Amino acid sequence: MESFFDRYRNLLVLLALLLAQIIGLAVQVRRTGEGRSTLDRGDGPGVRLIRLWAEGLVSPPERLIHSVKLGSEHLWENYLDLHNVRQQNQDLQKTIDRLRLEQAALLEDARQGQRLQALVNFQEKYIYKTVAAQAIGSSGSEQARVFYIDKGSADGLDRDMAVITADGIVGKIRDVFPNGAQVLAINDQSSGAGVILETTRIRGILRGNANGQPQIVDILADKRIQKGEVVLTAGGDQIFPRGLPVGVVDKVIQDPERDSFIDVLITPAAHLDRLDEVLVITSTQPRFNQQQQQDVATSEALKGAEAAQMKEQQKASQIMAERLPGLIDPNLPADQQPLHDSSNPNPVAHPPQALHPDRFTPGADPNSGSDASPSAAPEAAAPAEPDLAVKPQAEKSSSGGQTKPATKPQTKPALSNHPQKAKPQPVQPQKNSPGRTP
Amino acid sequence: MPLLGADLRRDLEIRRYPLLVYGLVPLAALVLQAWLPRLLGRFAWFDLPLVVTVYFALCRRSPIQGTLMGAAMGLFEDALTQHAIGVNGIAKTIAGFLAASVGVRIDVENQAIRLVLIFLLSLMSSGLVVFVSRFLLGLDYEWRWYTALFAALGNSLIALVLFPMLDRLQSRD
Image 1 (spheres, rainbow over the protein chains, first blue to last red):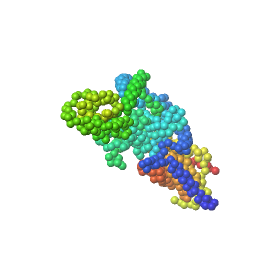
Image 2 (image 1 turned 45 degrees about the vertical axis):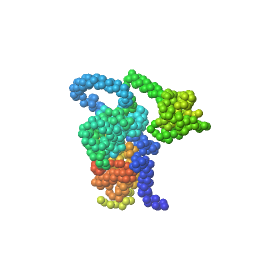
Image 3 (image 1 turned 90 degrees about the horizontal axis):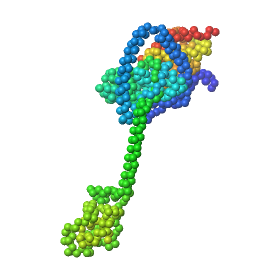
Image 4 (image 1 turned 180 degrees about the vertical axis):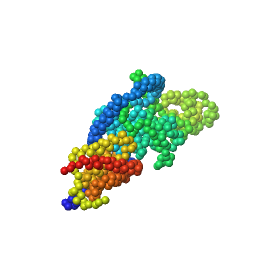
């Protein structure tokens, strides 16, 4: 056996290393519900440790190189290359004056917009706080569009924070280290950002292609999309605030996998290949002043009280509805009335069986009673005297065949006083009258 | 391409370097690989860790050392990306092993042979990365063949300059 290991030592070492790495890869990849393979979004402890080591090993020299580069540029720009500075200053002063005027006009529009947003309780997120950082290194791989910045968790950075420049969005923080962070650029194949086309208002998802160019995917073919249209962030991804510039449409191509879909290639607004200083958005909050925020809070409190009051009223109505009997639908037969529903909390109280049925007994023929003499028949056919207390009850009984509950307080006194009066004048509609017991 | 006995070549022509070179040169390769693309943008068609791996594997003529160095360089490269750790590791492990195995059997002092070797190993490394990503792991991994070709050419050009410089660092004892 010893000779075997000696003889194939090189090959065994190779196989052992390959096997270990394949097992390590298998741990990092998982299957989605759609049967596709994907990487775990969060690194495991072992993987994160390796990344931490790599970042710790590579970042210090990169910082050194970057500092030397910045220092030399600073030296050149501020002390050596100073020709035309006076002319530039004059031009800049003119630009500042013009921008001040524009700013004053825009400020008024912005205030008006904020007031309107406060009125409709529009929860727009504005950039509230940013941290400036320097891009110090990249992944070094053509297929991984990530870069490293010199600020990390010690500076308040966290995962999924948006990274932008003055020109437009750049990416989001993928991983954070104590003194550095890894940023996933928008032109990486695994990135994703919600965007909207400014003119056509078509929404889509932005991600990179194999050439490192961002493109909008998953949108239906639309001939309105033209080259040069501005693309903005849509704000739905919970990472980038709404309305930040992304780029302009460069080209529209057919989706190679789906016929009715297109890919919109974008020329990014930020110079993704030449990034030096970036801004990390560490906080997005409504940018209202204190008075406006108080107004919004007061409005919300009032609306809350009103809603509570309405809820109380609804609850009281519900209780009343439960206590009251169910309605009678005159269009339904008797066995399909709501009161026949066993789930009804107030079932119908049927009248007790009469001990001595007479013509007033429910179901009895008024003409076949014991004291219904033939001479009484014409009288019965004659119109009865109006009986205000009984008539409504009789009408209901004759029409629906159903009764009002005996518990109904209005009917009982009238019925209890009625027999003396109604006896000599049999009223036909009363034959089905409920609760009418001798 | 002159062929020699493996044991004879190994005994005669194993190169040795100061310990610092083994530490600093790979580190410099990793740092520059991470930093230069920021200057060159999309034209960063090279793979310095692979060039350094192949160089040391060829000069040391030890498959185990070549394998270990390739694995370490590849894993560190992977750790700097957002991809799975091990894709470049596997590719450079095999590249280091093959470079050292070839270095035992053929005369690699010739600069042309070195360039051809680095060109072929670069293509093979790119192919292995694609193979592992797309077929072994089943990931959505788009790539362009001409990028791999340009990277192989870039590695050859860098090797043309870098190998003689590194040759000067070897110990003379």
